[in-house]
Image 1 (cartoon, rainbow, N blue to C red):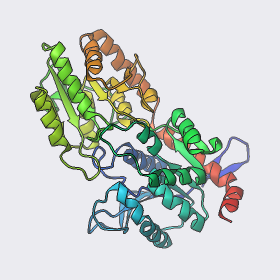
Image 2 (image 1 turned 60 degrees about the vertical axis):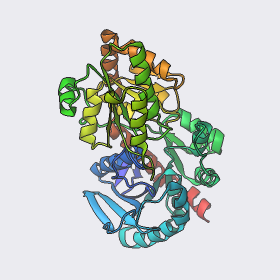
Image 3 (image 1 turned 90 degrees about the horizontal axis):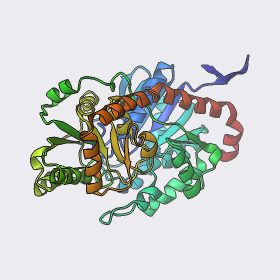
Image 4 (image 1 turned 90 degrees about the vertical axis):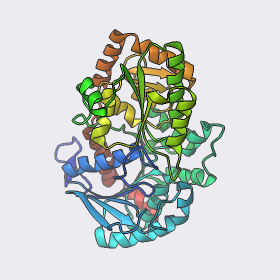
Length: 429
């Protein structure tokens, strides 16, 4: 298969088969719990888009429960492969570096049965550690997406949180130095990779995520609320893993602050997500906080939802709340806006690109619940302003399709296959 580069009579080689590595989280795990989130959606959806273009993807992940089949055909051109590496059980991300050598060995054996491949694309630093080593054996181009950066997370830690380990910093630095291309969602992260990790700017490509315009599109808000059995006059939503970084507690505290200053407003908060990692008790602690603040009856905790059900949550909400301390991009912001739901978010990381301040939502300077309550009130009591934001949000999202993400990524792949041979030979010699 070949792709033209715009020069008459000249064709560039496009990949036929990709090895995609996602060690710590299965690409088909439901987003919003454990370690799954926007990265999982990115991997699975891009694989689908590339398959439609005749490019096959084998998605490799660690077998984290007993009895999993080695190969699952997800759709024509997309397979999920489970590799043995450590116990067939969930393992904390902090402990996974001890099993990377085992994953590498399993991957080398699997390639003999399921390969060969034209290119390797790894996701998150753990997968990048394996990819940079397997690339030397396979002598293939190596593309990497970090999705989150340890140094950025450490710069935004809460007082009760442990910093990311030194092993992650070292691993990220090595991956940043060795990858043929680094894919980032925003120009800000491109600068962070260059400034904090010394990544060569010429190897960094900015390719944002997309949104499924068929699944996430404006619809009937009343019907969505009936389906979710919510009868409140106003509905707020929080969607994401229940971890301090994402700030679900800020959303609950903001609701309590709103209730104190505007008790006449009938508002319900839907919190959709599960505990992060192998942690437990996060939903219970959040429910306890809501009860202590006097809003227990107005906070509904829902487990991670399938994609079609999540679309209903976005549609039912007047506003999506994203009080994160850091975000590489914030895919849920894009999905909510595609449904015509404005987003209130902290002005951090990729959220500054995913949300139009004053047009498709509001960006707040900090996570002060009183400030969030004031912003929520300013929109709920102004139906005309809220309606204008709803229209702008839906319009903004239409410029972000997964087909465009896949097209630009394919350009990176073909460029590497066409012009990276000399560099690759030099790096692996």
